[in-house]
Amino acid sequence: MGGVNDPLASFAALRTDEGRALLEAVRDVEPSQELAAATRLRRDHPAELVSAALAQARLRQRAVAKFGAADAARMFFTPNGVEQSTRTSVATYRARRFKALGVRSVADLCCGIGGDAIALARAGVAVLAVDRDPLTCAVARANAEALGLADLIDVREADVTDIDTSSHDAVFVDPARRGGRGRIFDPEAYSPPLSWAVEAARKAPRAALKIAPGIPHDAVPAEAEAEWISDGGDVKEAVLWFGGGAPASHRATLLPAGDTLVSPLATMLPDPGVRAVGRYLYEPDGAVIRAHLVAEVAARVGGGLIDETIAYVTSDAAVATPYATAYEITDQLPFNVKKLKALLRERGVGVLTVKKRGSAVEPEELRRKVKPQGPGSATVFLTRVGGAPTMLVGRPAA
Image 1: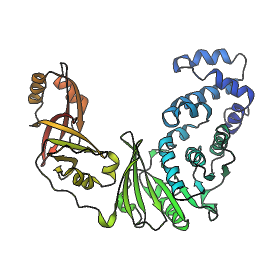
Image 2: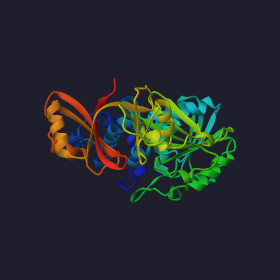
Image 3: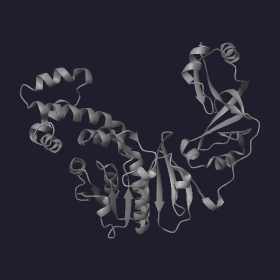
Image 4: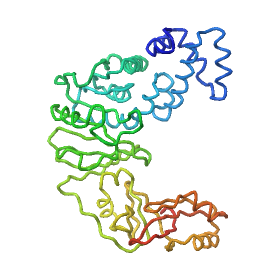
């Protein structure tokens, strides 16, 4: 196999008949069973190959959350690949958006193990997938073959800064945002830096740059559309879109439904005013908050903020909107754990959901102190109202 220090040789061995048989044999091995399985399998197979198969099985199990069970069982992964790959639902949405823009070919720069390239190919887009790491390229190539997409995905091992993308309809760049010490927050410390990616995008007919959701708004180029994407309520990423002549804007897209809220920068609403807590409280989706589109949600529900620094919207009317979760507020208390405990006991609340925004108190800490008991349920918001620490008690709006 070339030894444990030769990852390319170890990976190549996994793709032999013996390696594939081992992968099938360890597919359902639980962590607690690994030692026994390894001992048994090493009687008939090289120890390094058994270790590689078990490691790949663990990665496939982790990858199910992003890629789904069917694809994860056929694909190959690296630890960084599982960690940094785009979730399939997000990659599929982006690929469909490229396709809707008339894009037929994409240069996928910093392609990783091929998650975005796979989604693009499944949308019928030809992909040049580029990465400088030999093992990553080998894994991306294997994944294209495993999923029957090799005819549409051309994997190339190279430095992305050396690639001529002029023959492609669009460029997609996913810079590395992790280093030896974890996540990288400075866009210029990405690999390649955001400034290089922006220049590459400006040269292409169309382009999309994947960035961290927490990017400072002042780092967004003036001509780009900045899109924040959530999936199941969790913000997954931000994307900068270039080309097509559309005005610069901010967009929040909520998956899996695909609802999208967009506002050109020139017409974005100012922050809504602060008002007293009404009958309903709206919790905007995280993508809406990141995109600074809370004012648009407030306008839709006819509401205002409960505090100028808190992204909770309140109104007196129940208005259905996909961009925020609505709660009916039954009680408003100054922050006082004893009073809250007495109120919950009086209501017979045993199922307590605790949300916080603008409070240092941890939900589990509060739950331990109030010791909810009974058949009822309630939601408590630990927040600020007009600058004062406050507890709002309510329930999801019908």
